[in-house]
Image (cartoon, rainbow, N blue to C red; front, side, top):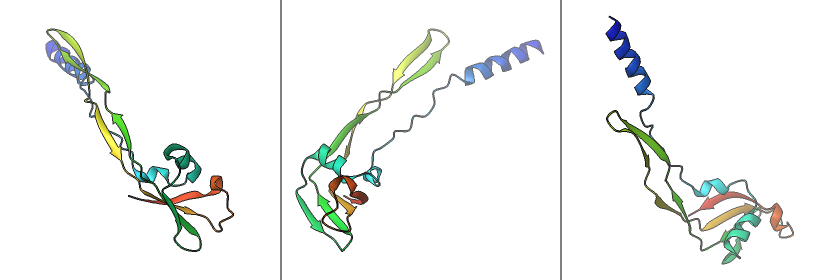
Length: 122
């Protein structure tokens, strides 16, 4: 009975050492909604063209492509003969292309810093 309890305790302790599934957070164009267009202009440079969609919305066309590298998160595996081993998830590029930013601008006199992004179209 005592050996059974020892085995169960050992199994419970080693169960916590199992590697967890790492989910990659991907950047999407919708992350920019609610932020001012001036931040995108500072990051991408001047827009290729600006056009009025309707009375309250203006479209900014950028030729932009952002590449970030995701991964490299460490995780551990346990081998009872040699000890624990540290591994890293693969590093891979993640490219996001956001072309048209739709902002709310009731008039042409609205400053760029007050124009908020309401929609992003690829």
